[in-house]
Image (cartoon, rainbow, N blue to C red; front, top):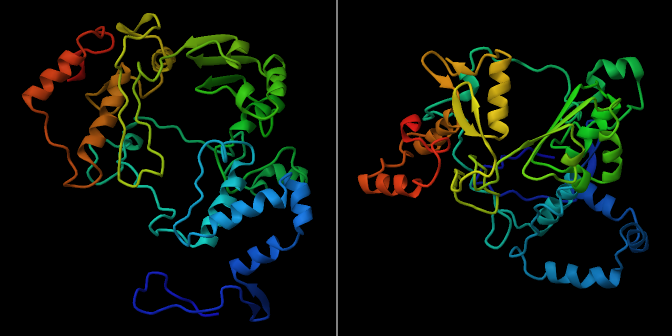
Length: 370
């Protein structure tokens, strides 16, 4: 084996993609050799039994997929990967594209264009949220889902050894289906309050009926608070339901999916009068929603980062716009010098105001936005 520079555009790289051998007394093999060995470790009959898919059904699909050179790709989003085994399914999909050799080829798989970073931290950012909190708290220990964590690195392993009480996930994150079962079991640690927002695991997670049993047991889940736009399949079991805003009524900066190959940022802002009731938090009227609840609780507890000097001297965090308009400003100036958007013209400002004239002042107040 010889080391090569993948960025060297002048020296052609040639070699055996399926090589196996020995280096300094150690057995070595290329990734493709290992992949082929694993693929051929079972017969077609075994694969049919495991997957429930017959060779007669699969073979035409395989022939079609491999009949277009690099102008064929296997994409993934939601269904194929947003489930318990999604990480491994995603790895399999990427592997198919590697075998097709289509990465960065026309008609093949390409990297997404990314976005401008609303949280700051870039050379041209107007605000960097991570550096602005006056008394930022830090976390320690593994997440309750044990994602991005090795079991062997923690005292649980030293004290209990193998097997662990629940799976650990050192290579992946967003293990959504593990949150409630882990909370209910109290592993790796117990919790007192379960808070749910933008989700319904009783419907979306495997064995959802078991999730319902857990949520109904106050010994395992002492307090369950849900923030939802409806009384949903999961929130119906909550001790308290906080009405929330729909996507037409709220702020947000959702990211684009990787199928968009140009740099793109979305800005979600209220375009409809909220259906939730109006509440007053520390003198500020606002629609009842997740952000209103968090601001109210933060102020009630006297937490730093809310109210006066929340983002530093002379700043305030009394309304959700105090946060989101800073995020919008970061998108507007871009990550690097030269990416700034031009100032709005008088005509654009007129249209902007008139388009929001029907919104209540608790949602759009130009003076507060300024």
